[in-house]
Length: 100
Image 1 (cartoon, rainbow, N blue to C red):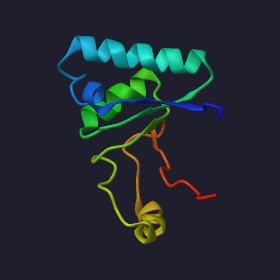
Image 2 (image 1 turned 180 degrees about the vertical axis):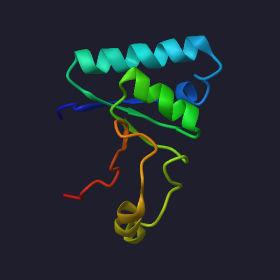
Image 3 (image 1 turned 180 degrees about the horizontal axis):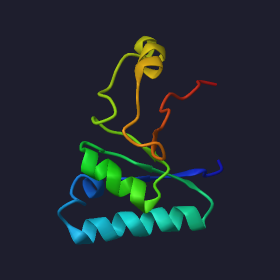
Image 4 (image 1 turned 30 degrees about the vertical axis):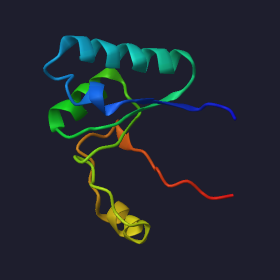
């Protein structure tokens, strides 16, 4: 199965505003992913500050409570129509997988 994205665990993302080591791990992971031709997804975005840092670092996509709490699939289409991003460059990742 080909790899097309790299996810950054929320344990690094949630502390990166206050922990320079976590911030460096996140930045390095984004750079590594991009150098490998992968999309990079950050998990655990819970603050506008984290969103802004990820945006500045060049992260491609994000997941977390700042964007939305988990919801039933039937609510997704309406949420997408109403959602206004806090940043134009980091976008939420579509986590729905089509079953084969």
